[in-house]
Image (cartoon, rainbow, N blue to C red; front, side, top):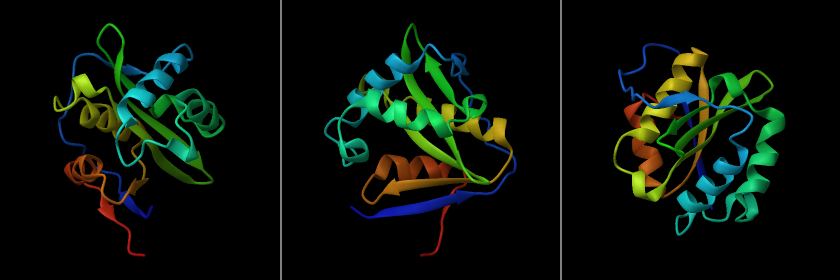
Amino acid sequence: MNRTVYRREPGPVPGLRHNNIRPLNGEDDAALADLMERAYAGTVDEHLGGNSDGAVEIEGWRPTAVPAASFVADENGIVAASLISRSGNDFWLAYVTTHPEWQGRGLGTAVVAASLRALDAPVLAGVTDGNTPSERLLATLGFTPVPR
């Protein structure tokens, strides 16, 4: 599948806030793995990185993770997450996930907005072509496609 890279320059982040957004902590990995599997099931991104195992994805993300800029929506359990990674000098929005039962409430946008506020740096994101919800979320927050 083709992917489009998006970029957002630092600057003011729209006032999208939610009361139950908190920084990621080291005890969240199992809940994040479960969230990934539920959120991606049946989507164009179902086979995360060539597999469907959220635990494998989280384990692969951890070496490049930026926990201080990664946030979750916690509603008596993690229902959305924005996971940031670093590659060289570049920050990447590695994963944005929202539990299917919680979609459409702005939680994905709120966790990404929290990540952007924490970084105040350029951020890149790769989106599988056809992932319309992610494309809309990024456009809402000021990301633009990088010319190929």
